[in-house]
Image (cartoon, rainbow, N blue to C red):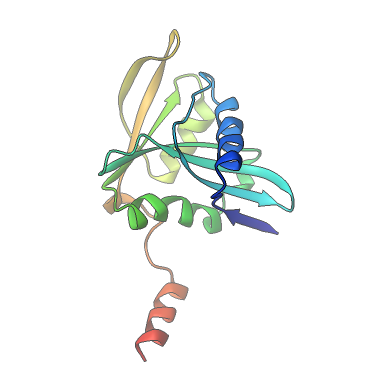
Length: 154
C-alpha cells in the first residue's frame, strides 16, 4: 500500500531531495526544501521537492520510479500543499526541453506552457510551465471532503 509522507527530519529531507535531484539532468541543489514523498512499504518510489518559494509562487520538482504511483490519491496532496497550505497563487515547473514524456505528463496534469528558460540545463533549454490555483483540477473538494464538512457542521 502506498504511503504519503512529509519528512520533518533535516537529514531525511536532504537525502530525498538529493534522490529527486539525481533524477533531473542538471542535478539541482535544493536549499531548505519542503518535500512530499511516496513510499511502497520501505521503498521510496517518488517525491516532490518544493523550492524557490516566493510568497505567491513555488517551484515543484518531481521524480517517480513509475508513473503509476502518481494516482489521484498522491496528486491531491501534492497540489493541495502549495495551493491550500502555503496559499500560493501559482506553481512553477521547469522541464528539460528533451524530456517529452515529462512535458506531456505535466501538460495533462494541468500545467500550461509559458515559455523557455534559456540554458536552464547547461547547454540545453528548459520549458517553463505554470499552473494557477483556479486552474488546478487536483484541489477541488472531493465528495468525501464535502461529506466530512457536512458531518462536522451537523
